[in-house]
Amino acid sequence: MQRRTFLTLAAWFVGTTSLTHATVIHNHVPWAPRPNSPPEMVRPGPWQFFTLDEARAMEAIVDRIIPPDPETPGGKIAGCAVFIDRQLKGPYGSNQNLYTLGPHTHGTKEQGPQSALTHAELYRKALAALDKHCKSTQGGKSFAELDADAQDDVLRKIESGEIKFEAVDAKGFFSALLKDVPEGFFSDPIHGGNIDMVGWKMIGFPGIRYDYRDWVGRHNERYPHPPVSIAGRADWTPAKS
Image 1 (cartoon, rainbow, N blue to C red):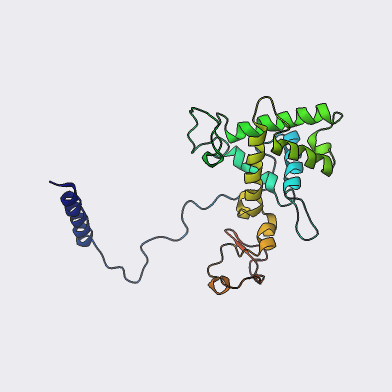
Image 2: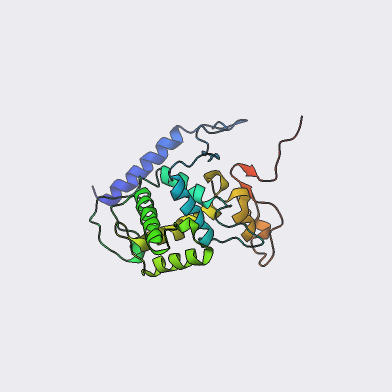
């Protein structure tokens, strides 16, 4: 039997079998509401991955990558460090869905990071190396203790490759920050970042509203309705009985 004939017969068999077992749905839906695996919401609380010193450094870093301005809070207030902390504690931190056995060779930018380190190990080693570098070059001060200009200078030198770390790729760490910090700023608030939907409000993103097709083609106009998270609206309160 030729391959084309086999596939044609298989498709016919599946189709006729499906028709044989078809049923008519009337006055009910064939599924139950409220699925058993709702999204897990990040709750305020202690750091789950970062130590206190690492957390202080991370809050300073996210506030330099996304600095505050008169209209929008910076990365720290928006919860970017909390977002990264929870991600590193979970499957993302352990590279659960990534192939990590090697070979680990330096590839192109499009190939992504080529490292034996998990994301959690990358952050842990890089933050320790950052602390060591700052204390040895900044009069014993940690990164979090530097003023904003000095922090920016350190981050620029890491980005350019001028500052190198011994046990970890410094530029790779900076690349991870450029990905993870904005994710925390614009992710759904249930993941710990984008507190009060400040990132969405800044760009006029409606969130997961059911329908906003009337506004898709209206450019240079601010969307007038508040954004909606998976958990609901920031300005919504339950009705009193």
